[in-house]
Length: 309
Image (cartoon, rainbow, N blue to C red; front, side):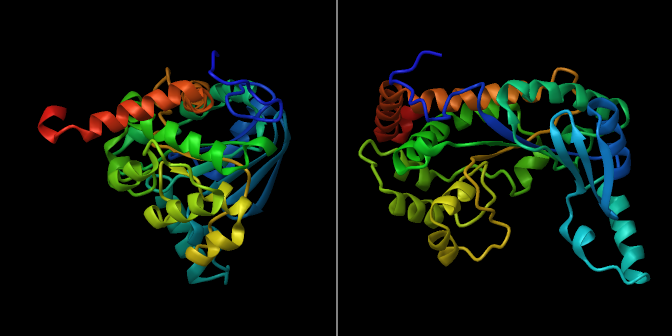
């Protein structure tokens, strides 16, 4: 990768190896026990069912892998041995068609992400259903690339945000966002007002301003690139003063919510999606190219709207 600035030895941005990435895969058609058995068959380990719809496959080839039905009420409401239990089981069964089963991997080296593609193929062969298998299948893939010490500052985070805003339209076209995901709020694109604010050529916010601006325009976790985890990691009190959402987790990672989990497509690859993310970081660390792209974007937006058609 050719970039316009020297990469700091203590920066993770743009690195394919020596960099850890957590992966979350959503799909339908398989319950948590069946999913756990497939993981064990592919990656080894021991199945530990921690709750009715929560399982951990421990000591696999890539570490402990969580398998859970991604429906908080089903997983967390208390059992009473009666109506609640029966209702939870009913909703869990429905969830396999509408609400996803989710696999959550531990952080693994970026070079090993492609190993998950064989697991995805095994899930699909066993009846796993992806985003395009049904109109209500609002399933996605989440990547959580870690950040290192040199990345945890306003300058680095701002550059990645700017790069993502510039590339987002092309990414969404390349990914071919499923119609269900455009209706559901989970991977909403950033609004025009925020783009205009952050892509100003003179936008050079400090960390407090970057956080305040982000929350003012995006008071939600439901953005295609959810920056709240890393912002909370850097200033948890500031984030929580503005957003009272217990689901905001503080961690030094980006949280990229990809809109599709295309299990039924043999060509779909988690490794390929990881490469898409690295293209964002490649632009972010190439300061000369990023500046040119921002200037060109601003110049295009300054034209009368008829000239932009």
